[in-house]
Length: 85
Image (cartoon, rainbow, N blue to C red):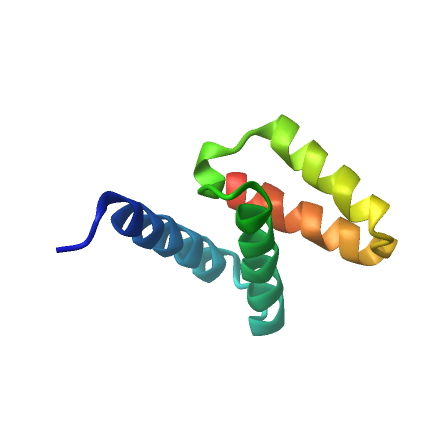
């Protein structure tokens, strides 16, 4: 039997996949968005659906301090907005 964290992650992933399908995002964009959401989750060590706007801001600050390029930062922010929508 799956634990509640696995079930929540599966549910979250299904919701995320449905949004991709509805918005007709390219496969490359889908991969990047999923990668950004995964990095966001790993940064905080908990599910992205339990993270808020202040967490997004903190993550952005960390990415900037690491020297992320502006286009990559912008795409990451778009991915997190998409995810949180």
